Amino acid sequence: MNTRRDFLHLLAASAVTLPLLPISGLANEIKIIEEHYDGPVLRVAIMGLGGYGTMVANAMKDCKKAKLVGAISGTPAKLKDWQSKYGISEKNCYNYETFDQVKNNPEIDAIYVTTPNALHHPQVIRIAKSGKNVICEKPMALNAKEGQEMVDACKKAGVKLLVGYRMHFEPKTLEIIRMRKAGDFGKIMFFQGQCGFSIGDPKQWRLNKQLSGGGSLMDIGIYAINGSRYMVGEDPVWVTAQETKTQPERFKEGIDETIQFQLGFPNGAVASCLSTYTMNNLDRFFLNGEKGYAELQPSTGYGPIKGRTHKGELTQPHVTHQTVQMEEMADIFLNGKTPEVPVNGEEAVKDLKIMDAIYLAAKTGKKIDLKLG
Image (cartoon, rainbow, N blue to C red; front, side):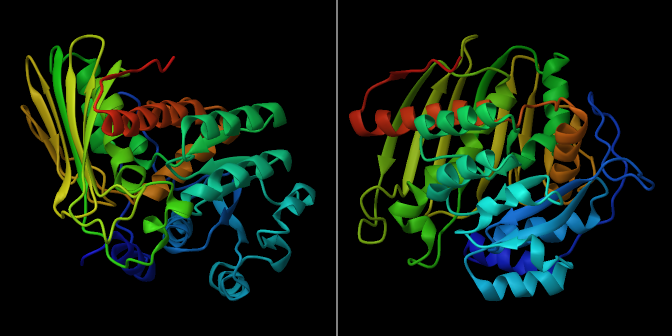
């Protein structure tokens, strides 16, 4: 399997989910799926019915607190297919020209945006104006300016904006965060994040600057940017970066093939990260402290995540990431729950500020100071 798109289509088609098991040993215990639940349910419409939107839809079949009730697409045939496949009412289906009408639909509480990156900004702002809550896939926008405009629009409209940071709810990841907070690793010294795969179809939207806004960093590198923050437990204060392009005929101007970047943190920790579209087998996080270490490999794939620390293997069970994510986000929307790691728009703007700085550092060869507050 050569591309993430192939993987998405395979997984979406198979709709395989593993048994849901209780998780223990987490500082902030996650209630994955409750056998009996009679509380409020978040009614969700998905915008963008491609590979990832389908994956979310399939994962939501196992949710108790979130339910798929609507669909938004520019392809009429997809809307018809989703109506029959997921039992969606025709009155809850919209296209990209008509979805503003959702403001008059009391059956939809939130819209999950899974469209290409460049569409997030205008679509989220339109959703906010319709009075509906929003979940937006990452990266939330093409740059920090756009991201802040999205946050401001949602605040102005009085709606909540969450971002699809599924790893913020992943059990092995949360166990490492719990151990760090407990002091098991001692002072954190170093983080390494490796994110990459060999991308396939040259005509796909990820290699179209107008739709993607960039290359590997916008797509897979965001995991290392965000992961460095929740693994180290701090926000970086400087960045340096280098871009390498070995196939300029394939990766046109504005589409980065490979970027290496380094981050510095307030307490002295440093991070070394890599994002690429030309190398497979790169999905690894490593955290090193004065007393111990933690490693995840795979670290951000769709699962199962595997990990170990200086104390031994991490054994928390795998649950479909998007199922857990939607259950937890329903709790945030409906009950005001505070997640262990933030998933709000402000969190995403911080990542976008780092991303902007990485691109600037790669272009200028200079060390860029960061102010994320």
